[in-house]
Image (cartoon, rainbow, N blue to C red):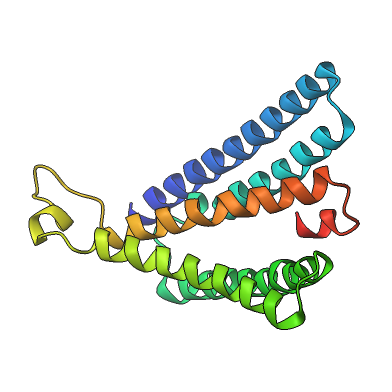
Length: 189
């Protein structure tokens, strides 16, 4: 009986995940068709396409959570490690190095442009530190709640705020590079 319930549950989760992917693809096609009717300026359309690619990647990254209900620790650690490695590579090769080059093209010296980019990184880290302090500073009742009124764990809120704080400048970088016609805009998206 337990395996049969697991098979039914797994089949249902697969259908939900597959249905979500179909819904996402259908929505993307409808939005693409709607944008073609607007006759937008090509640079703006390119920026929207780049941002849509990023949004699709974020949505597809959530699919394992929809499919695997109880994720083993080893799988979770592997997926988080993969995500961290991709983000570190994207930060180094798609943001930091081009940012330094862009600052140098504006007339800053190599040291000044590196300092400017380093200041931005430190401000971002400080912002996440402040969010962490604010989220984890509550009393135990406000952090875990009561059985009648459960509360979302502070580390989950920190993760949500970090993703939001990450996606805003990422979207700006993709939109500006794609809208400005930069040659590496597709790889950045």
